[in-house]
Image (cartoon, rainbow, N blue to C red; front, side, top):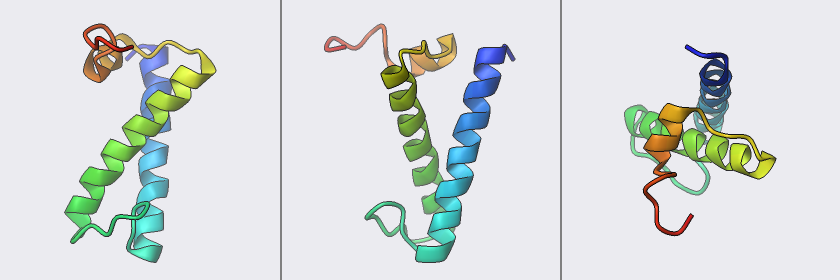
Length: 79
């Protein structure tokens, strides 16, 4: 992986682990209460990706190319 994707992956995975640690303590992800650990993991992944994308955009960094396409940066009409 390129250095940009590597740093992106480490940021996302660390966010996922902190969100899941909070879920283990409180049983919640934000205000949601997922019904089981698998549902919580799916939600934690989605939340972590959106938080990291928002952080990258506010910092003025470019997202790695594969993530840009997945986020729909080129195809979205309102961005």
